[in-house]
Image 1 (cartoon, helix red, strand yellow):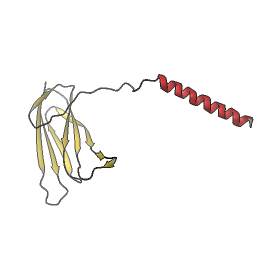
Image 2 (cartoon, helix red, strand yellow):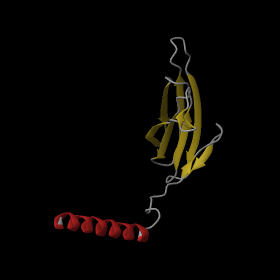
Image 3 (cartoon, one colour):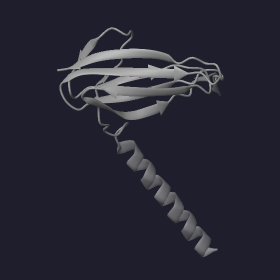
Image 4 (tube, helix red, strand yellow):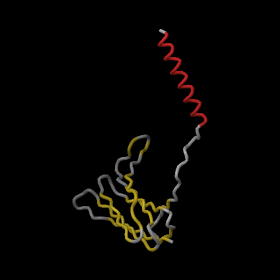
Length: 133
């Protein structure tokens, strides 16, 4: 009985101490900030070497979406996008975001190709062009 009481006091003390630490902790930890450029059309634009360009390839479920970069930049992330409505996955889209980081100055061209899953699907290519200052 004494052992159970001791354990109960120990648990309550640990819980109270953890709560006190949570209340003094910052609301959000310091996060590394990045500058992301998201073009809303296919017109040429400029970025700095420290900015990241985010381009979205769109397609239906099962589409193959790829990106090809020409110029002083590289793809650092390819993000598969899974949308939710009313807490449930949205059926249909199979979008993918590409994050592109400049590696030097100059003109960069990115071609995003989306090919549907159908056997006779024709690839749709969208080209983006930007200049790294």
